[in-house]
Amino acid sequence: MMYNDFVLLAIACVVVVGMRYLYHKIQALRNLLNYLKEPREHYTIVIIKPSVIPAIAEVIRPFIAHMKKYASFEFETVDCVHNLNRDKAQEWVNYAIDCKADLILAIGLLSSEVAFNAMKMHHQKIPIISAGSPMGYNVTPFEAMQATAPLTAVCTRMNWDRKIALLRCVSPRIKTVLIIYRSVDEISHNNLKEKNSITAALRKMHISWRMHHVPNIDKSTELNAQLLEDIDIIILSRSSEILRYSSRIAREAQQFDVPVFSPDISCPDVFIGVSECPERAIGIQGAKYAIEILEDKVLASTLPLKEITSDTMVVIHPKTASPITGAMVIGNFLTQSNHVALSLITNNNAIEKNKTTP
Image 1 (cartoon, rainbow, N blue to C red):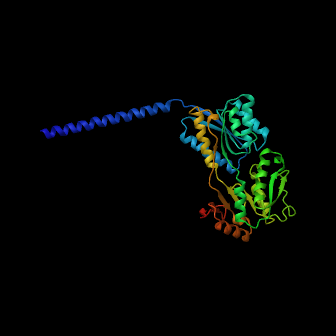
Image 2: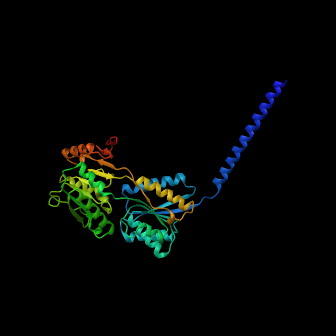
Image 3: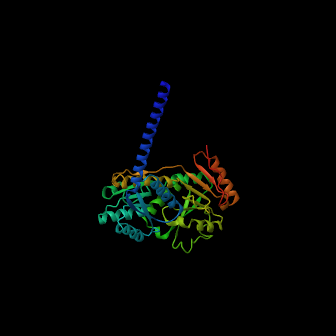
């Protein structure tokens, strides 16, 4: 008889515990439903960018993905492309002000400087996240910008010393290079600083150079046999819009058996592409700052400037150069001592597994 009472008591306890567990689950579900029914904050983020090259997309894509995953609010983004036209960039900043945007993601130096000047001039308080601007290239230091405008920055470094040293390592016979810029960018402060960085790095490696300023690259690159005489490789500048035309430049240079070196790895026609590949990290860090600003109500000017560093990636397209040049460069790369990831792209669809040198 006592055994039966014990069994009944145990069953009753199990039922009570089960009912309590079920009750709490129902309450949690009810709270979740109530939370979902509540209107969520909605924000507009204006993304001001210089162009639509793949490197820019590699910043925006992880920025949006991280926001969707971790932000508790709803948001919409508005893409604004200015093609390195200051007046157009100013129009987009004015648009952000007029539509009462909640945040500006300014990609690149020009976007950042125009947004900063507008906030300062019109006493606007739209927070700005400057993304991907190289340290030391802006006219006004970021620290000074933060003192007068709601701005923070996720920065990189051009690191031309590293790029040119790597170029010399993989192609030690280089004597003279041609550096291509658009004529319209010739007096740009940012491009002047980049020119100084490139030429200083070349001087260290005892490599001669010539500048080629293209007046109207939309119509012609003006590459010819006379210009490319004694040129071992063409270097594409990073801080101008020249990368938009990298495929055309590379294809035209191939006619004269001159390979192209680019600070971007996305073009399949460029012989050697070198990048520190920080784009994804820039996008994610920018999203983290955006969540702090919009969700936690942190002032942008109080967020520290973040410098992004990453591993170097080299992409070689052997078919874009002569077999002898391709074999020599790959062989030199595999025997050099730096820790660098290498991808050999044998055609547009197949990429061999990355190899890291010891």
